[in-house]
Image (cartoon, rainbow over all chains, first blue to last red; front, top):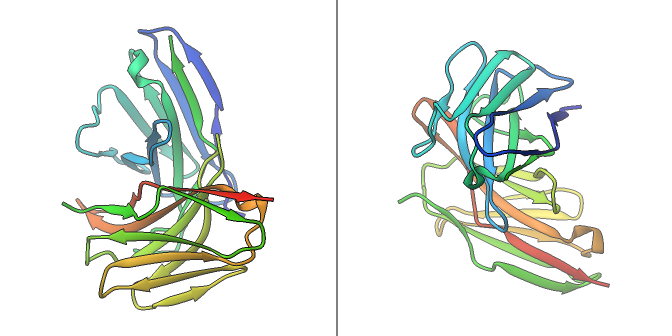
Amino acid sequence: GAVVSQHPSRVICKSGTSVKIECRSLDFQATTMFWYRQFPKQSLMLMATSNEGSKATYEQGVEKDKFLINHASLTLSTLTVTSAHPEDSSFYICSAKKPGTGGYNEQFFGPGTRLTVL
Amino acid sequence: GESVGLHLPTLSVQEGDNSIINCAYSNSASDYFIWYKQESGKGPQFIIDIRSNMDKRQGQRVTVLLNKTVKHLSLQIAATQPGDSAVYFCAENTFKSSNYKLTFGKGTLLTVNP
């Protein structure tokens, strides 16, 4: 149980285009999902917290108009990178908070999406 | 500022040896800690967690120790196997801006030599 999937696993796009990444909790309902970005040989950096039915909370320094997050259902959150540029190339990872854990924020992670912007 | 850091960026061990990965944290309000394993090109995988009201927790071949006095966390892996080779991250849970969030450490690359 507690499987999180992401789609696509890899995407290559041209500079200036937009890319949508999907994150799904397959066997549980996730009221809270998280989006992280990871550059090579670095740690995971939280971009935003996505709560179902409400606006996402973005971390300091993350442009909300560039990284659009939609958590329209209890099993799906999407991240859209708008007007992508080469510096947006990174490994994007989503996670879903395990239900029923309250403040103990155990998260299940997706397999990640490798974005390359040419 | 608040941070989670690791003492050793790389660790190389022989198969069968025990491994110890260390982590320091600075936020005394953190109440929950998790160790994750990340293999190349994949998402983090949960290994073991510990709440702040505990100082030790054991799993299968893994043990996490928490020393709140010095804000130190460690992950011990017994009888390390080649399949344990990966980057290991500690993460601390804090409550900020009406949300719980995990802050990840820098990571330690564990290499197990056969």
